[in-house]
Length: 351
View: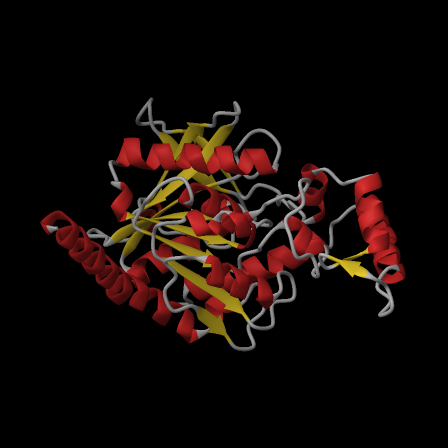
C-alpha cells in the first residue's frame, strides 16, 4: 500500500501550484504593474539607500503600502475546504471530522480515531478549527504546527499522521482565519491571534506543558510561530522555509524594517529563548535561501541548521535528510540543550 506521508507531500505541492493559478485577473494585472515599476527602478546606475532605489523610496513614502496589502501580495491562498466539522451522533459535546471528496487520503476507521477536532475562540472573535493528531502513545513532544498558505487541515492531515509516527510526537494544528472550517478572513493580526488561541487550547485541554511543546512553522506559518516563540519560553522551535519580512520578499534588497512592513520576523527572532532549528532549501523559488540564512544568524539559540541542497519551497520533505535532521533535533539536540540549561541553573544557584 502507498505511504500517505509521501503521497501527501506531492499532493500538497500540486495543490499549492493549482491555487496559485487561480489568482484573479486583477491580482495578475497588479503584479504586472508592480513588475514594470521594479524593472524601471532596477537600473545598475540607480542610486540606492538601505537597499532601495531613490525612485522606490519616493514611491513608498508618497503612497506607502499598508501591511495588509503586503500580506495580500504574499498571497493568502485558502483552498476550497477539504473537510467539515460536525457534531458526533453518539456524543452531544463531541465534534467529528468529515473529509470531503477533495481530501488527499481516505482513512481507515482506526486511523480516523487518531484525529480529534475542536474549535478555539481567538481574541479577535474568530472561531478557529483545531486538530489534535495522536500519532503515538508515548510522545516525546507535541508539535504545534502552523502550515503553509495554500493548504488546510484536511490536506495536511495525512502528513501530520505520518510525520508524528516517524518522529514519535503528537501534532496539534489549526487553520488560519478564513481557512478550512475557521471563520473570518486571513490577515497578519489574525495570524497572531489564531496561533495564540491554538496555544491556549493545547495547554488547557490537553495539559501539555510549555517545555514539551515544539512550535513548527512552515513558510507563512513561520510568522505566527516566531511571534509566539518570542513571547513564551517553550521546548523548541522549528522554522521551515522562513521569511525575514514582507518587504524583504517583495523587495529583496531591503536592508531595514520599514514602519509599514508586514511579518517582521527578522526583528523578533532575537527574542526567542528556546532552541531553534532552521530548515531551508538552497533553490527556494518563493522565499529566497538568504531569508533562512539571515533568520539563523539572528537566532541566539539556533542549533545546526538544515540547508537542503537543490530543494525548492515545497519539496524539502521529500529529501531523506529532512526526517533524519528532525529526529536528531528531538533526540540529541534538545536533551543536550536541556542539560546545558540545567547545568547553568545549578552553577548560578551555587554561586
